[in-house]
Amino acid sequence: MTVKVPLTAHPTPSFRLGQTTIPRFSGGWMHQFGHIYALQREMSKPTNSWFRAMELWHVARSEGVPYSSYNYAHILQMCNRDTQWSQAMKICTQMHREGISLETDCAQHILAACVRSGQWEMTLQFFAEMRRRGIQLNELCVLSVVIATRSQCAENGDSPGAACETALQALASARLTSLSNVLHTEVTKLLAALPLDCPRADELAAYVPVCKRLSDDSQSMRLNLPEW
Image 1: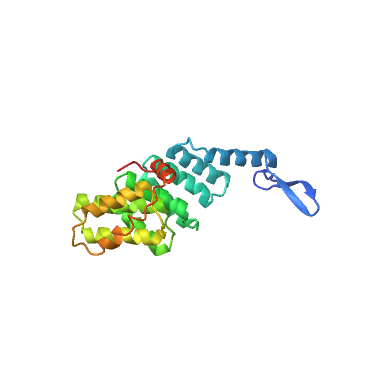
Image 2: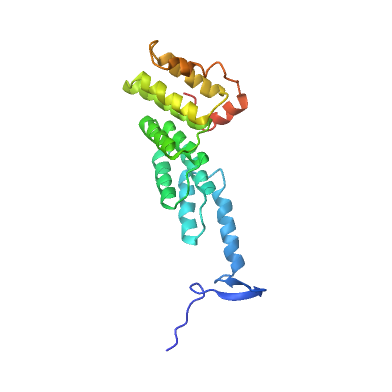
């Protein structure tokens, strides 16, 4: 008895270029390439919601389309915009499973999603994990950490000294030479909430005078985080 094997299971040569064989799947290799290209175009649309981004991720997995750190950053951006912090953390876990390194552009959206959702403790826990992994912070990351530590200190009565220490760690990790308007304002608010005898408050205050009023940076950061 002869068993016929479908083309979808075993590709057959369509034509040869020298010694290179281009496989032909059912529907044609050009059809497959066009489908993958259209899917990647759809994934990059900024108008998508986090739910649509997750739908496309599942479609991409079923089609065998590889996801890069860039693709995951797009999903995390949608989670940040739609304040889906728990989804952002799940995506972070999935990236770890797939062996994809967590870059700064991904981490900034996870922190911002947590802050926009009022998850102060989760924000600080993820910041600690970033420091452990040696992930470089940018100004948006620092802004999220400063907002979280100030808010947690005000709402939960945490130690002002610990809040000051965390803010200094974030600022030092980012190696900032200047602060935007938004970050300058948040650091100033944190300083105002600290007692006069707070250790290392002077070190935190030293960051404020060097502020360069970068209106362009401030505007771009307002697109990612609300004013607090």
